[in-house]
Image 1 (cartoon, rainbow, N blue to C red):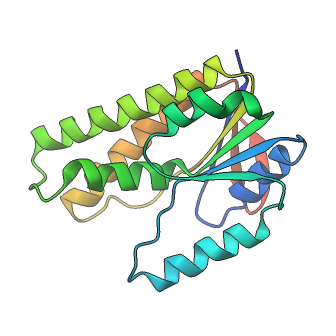
Image 2 (tube, rainbow, N blue to C red; image 1 turned 180 degrees about the horizontal axis):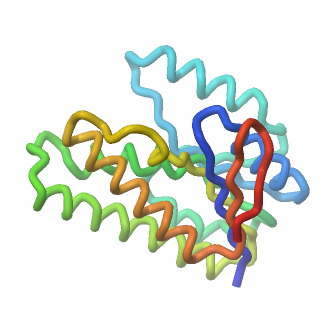
Length: 185
């Protein structure tokens, strides 16, 4: 059974840098990148390239928001640590994939959330079965105002519950503010 950690904080809080420093303590690192840049999104493509350039060359990378649990089942024991950055992008991509072109009704929101929870549960189970340490990075987005539209409110609620789902399963939880990590669990 592996050790698991959750690192959370606001945008640009330093959470990824903190998690990367933790991962760098190990020899064999897998970086699971869940952000996907679409063809017409040059700004996000540039962000991804910047992230790729800052990672050590000896780290392996798996870039996807789907099939993560299956990938970990097959490959996780090749690594000492696996860093999943980030849960927020994972949930975003799954949310819009599962929603598709449908109107967001309450029933469909429940269905989408159940699909995301199942995917995250599978990742957690794969992490528990692995010998590698699993580090999750996520955004704490519930600290601001209540969003003005239903889609954003539903998304905020889902990511909040997913973060709770992960936090209850991991041994360590860190909250990062202005580059300073504080251990909460």
